Amino acid sequence: MQISFLLTKYIHFISIFGMIACLTSELILVKSTMTRSALKSVGRIDGLYGLTAMLAVGAGLTLWFGVGKGFDFYNHGVMHLKVTLVIVVGLISIVPTVFFIRNGKGDPNENIAVPSKIRKLIVTQLFILACIPLMGTMIAYGIKL
Image 1 (cartoon, rainbow, N blue to C red):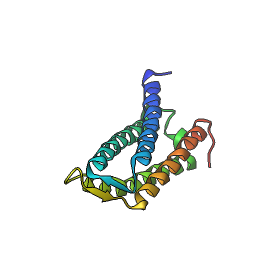
Image 2: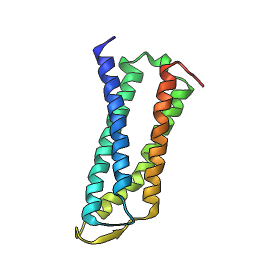
Image 3: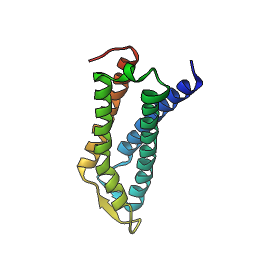
């Protein structure tokens, strides 16, 4: 087995754990009312979430189109569903990210009301992210839809 394949799989795997850790941290830290300073801190975690997401997608695409088991092995319904879920998570993540960026600026001690939809969107992302590794396992075992 190629070292590039193993390293790419490892990066893919670890970055998914990083995404889940960041989102879990956000869920724990986001309260109904927060100071701008606290929002800025959560925004940094959200930035790390974005970085780990880019690493996961980059490694996944590298596996699909480069060092993996070949395009045909991955190119079927389960993989398409997995990619769709990744895109959905990415789109959902825009709203909390914009909120953290916009509201992290200003007087650091000012209290800001956090809409309940921010926490709901974080929970939704976590739920969808929990489904994505199942798709990866199905793909690895050759299960196709």
